[in-house]
Length: 167
Length: 297
Image 1: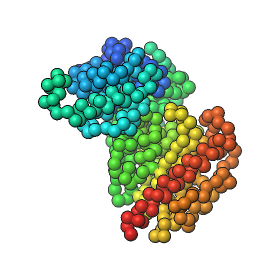
Image 2: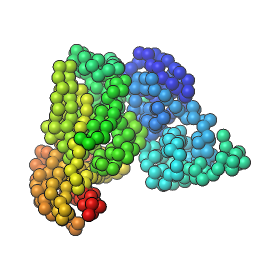
Image 3: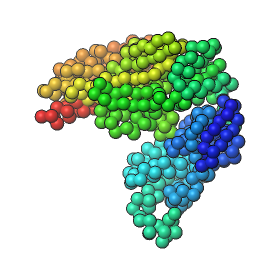
């Protein structure tokens, strides 16, 4: 069946079997391996992608459900200013150990930071409630998102550019 | 590749009429796909399989929310995440906001729909007890007719409800609340990611002396279907609930075969949890109700 959608900014058209899940189309047909298959039961959030700007679990969607929608994976978000800040902060604050959950964590926190105002720790924890990490105990992940949030909301663009973190 | 659903024929109508034609004309097992957040796990594990899936996500006219003087009107495709983030709903119907926010997690809420949550009718679904406590009306449509079902007549039991084989849930209507009414939804989970053991939805109205003039209390999750607890409602009438909420296990007139066991907890523990969720929900609805009186005074 014909599936038309926008993937990381490019219009795509592909013939898929209707029972195929979105995660399998993204990984197998488009080679987007940032989308991780963790639990395969819609629990762990390692397969999180953005559909029309909002995080969803790609293992719990038929690919056909994104007909005419816009899908973004970590690959398509790498050049976004917010994502660069988040990645640096995760590295600096030990927001990852094995890294398996990280792409999902980054997408969920990217969505949180998009709202353009400061988040408190409760909001940060709520934003990643659908993402399971078995290494860090979450504290360092929350710290990473906290710092990225502070950088984005408290630092002026000029200061960021001086530090080489601007757009 | 992990789990994959068994094969089915997929249809994606772009209008409601087209969908109604399909559901009436296709023979075999037919299922409507909305957000799919409960359905797809069943398909993946092959607990369920269908000859046809009718994906209604292309019918944009089914995704709406309207708040006006007569009440609140939801299209079945309105997402749980949209409810959770809607300030008008939070202000007017805190219990709907609390139920929506307690559904699974952010990602699931972004896909899951109010219509799906109601029509799936899992005892652990969060929206059903709330719409029962708010006297909602559910509109079902087939190719031939449209009918309005009151929420007490809608839920039959686990995964069973009033939706006929050729019908689609097309709207949910919540009547406007009376003045000085508070609502609340509370659920209790053993651990963060499991189904709740017990959930309670309340709607309390108070008079000028802060005494309860109307009480609706619904228990769910631990029962086969969301159920109003009339003995407890009667117990609350004419009382000021600023102190302790007078609910004890003696008032819980639930028959043994009405319980739905999800978890391996003892019955005594379950009863304690039930009383705790009922009390929390009633207390919170009452506090919201008296806020109206105190602000008006």
